[in-house]
Image (cartoon, rainbow, N blue to C red; front, side):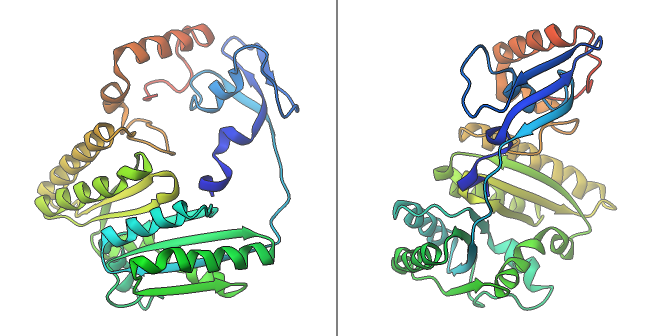
Length: 305
């Protein structure tokens, strides 16, 4: 739901953390607005535990929406699906979720049984709208109107209990990917929303060149696309090919103005690629900031930023 509601840092008002040496640091509070001093709480929210141990967080809450509806839309090709997404946002609609599935993802889902998409669908978008019953109904109507010029091959609306059936296909992607190969490298690349088509095409070509299926799906609404590079770990040549594809996609994401991780962080597996994205100056100042809080670098050591 980040496309409408934002990400974790947008909901954290205050943080209490213990930094190396045992000092307790309180940042922010319960005030909705606070512009005094540097925003240290956001620094801690995005630090992956490299600055200290968070022991308490104060978060903002809002009421649950009265209702929601979801729409799974099938398209004849990738270009039509991307044009469809642009048309929806261009019409002033703001879904709480806008998910994307490419042709390889749809193939994996079909191997598990029927899904509510036309057989000729080569790409799909899944939208979710929430709010009042009247407001959601109006948004679904405007969605249909906005998508009409792209000639979708199917439109499946899920309301009430039927909404879960529409989302079942999305939730089956991760387990369903193993129908294509027994192992995968799963990445969470993110690029500016307008450059998602380029990233998907690069991923599809990289997979074709390597002889491996690559699934592209995820949070199109904020440009965060998951790429699953499927392979068989019992074949060393496929493992090597999968890692070559991963490196190609990392560099493509950065070249397109994006990032090697939109939500999961870098950890160990992406640590070696962090300098390629951030560069020496940013890393210098990030490490300098870290040493202020953790001079001996004992917090979450060895991980990429």
